[in-house]
Image (cartoon, rainbow, N blue to C red; front, side):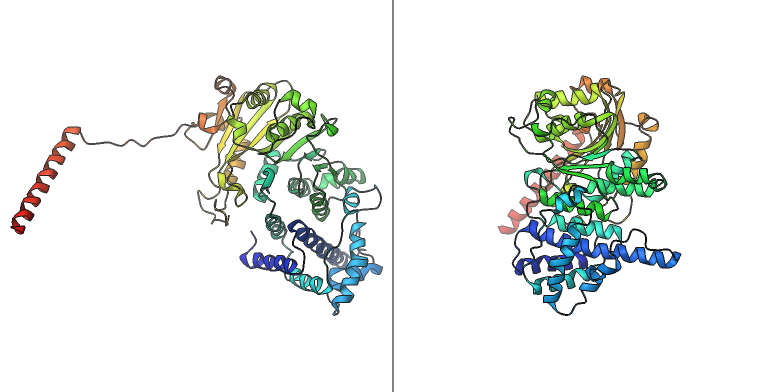
Length: 494
């Protein structure tokens, strides 16, 4: 978690933009992202140079050539004159980052950056913001990620139309449960700032670096044919592309696409892993919605349509970890029931993690769950593993402060452990415990209701009460004492 001091610094930068003439929250975050991106490129180049100095070898894949040294953050920020700095950034640095991933159609990054505009209005504002950004520590990966999430959280429109920023530790949990492997084709059909794709890339880099960088072909596959993200917000596509590039993925397939529309109905049986938190609480126009999705689930609800989409675009054998609102688990409409039956009977529903309602604060207090399933097109659900998450390591109020690492404050390590045992020891656990398994037939008998409260047993503590005759005797005695007191009071008044 970032400290209150860093949050205050970001708040000051935000206020500087507003007072400097940029009041659109999305424009603020986009311009600030460009500056953080430029700063991070310089940091990466410095790391490459330090490694080259240690090994005595040339700088590997340099971002800046010696002739481009003046474009580096550490160089232009030292220019004393704001007007000179502004000219360098606007006319040279910004065009440089626009073409960083290649030109023309060679890079999805370049395609999204075509329409990028440098809109900081004055040299004075640029100089002020550069000084402020320079004061923020960006070395630690977690701090950098949390900083980015904090900035995204300041977008005024966040939370509207069901679009909530997914907390990074929840993303990390979902990625850890899915264990991405080299050769996976990983997709988020509502990718936003590409948080799930970034976490999956980091997992592969951490656990399978030897495989993904073993050859030119495997490296190319990792950079170009592993990560797929769709969104129809051009600003978020640019931010997502920069986010991926900063995390070592050079050319992910991040496309401007409305995943649920009829115009993109052709994608099917393509991806081996889906990681997503699609927008929910929304309603679509059936006329523009993909007809093959409506054939699976006849509804306008986006959360149900996205689930149908996941099943369509996954390969057989593909896995999914996706966030859904609780209503998907127990909704009584025909569409709700049909989709749950499809998941249980037509494919393999592996598990459901019920999350506390505070996970998405301060955006919303909506209750959500993580659905974990495998596409088989031939059934395979034997039992479903349930976990009742009570705590995620952070306070469940609007502040979402990190809690001390004590028992009961964080269920995530326990979830990781018990997920691995879902087909063994977890099957013998009692329904009174935090996690347990439920046979498929019982779920079918309950109309495919997937709410954990349907199956969880609550232990009521036995309370022994005194016999009614004893209670009556005590009441009579108390009443006698009251009457004696009243007689005494009456005598005193006389």
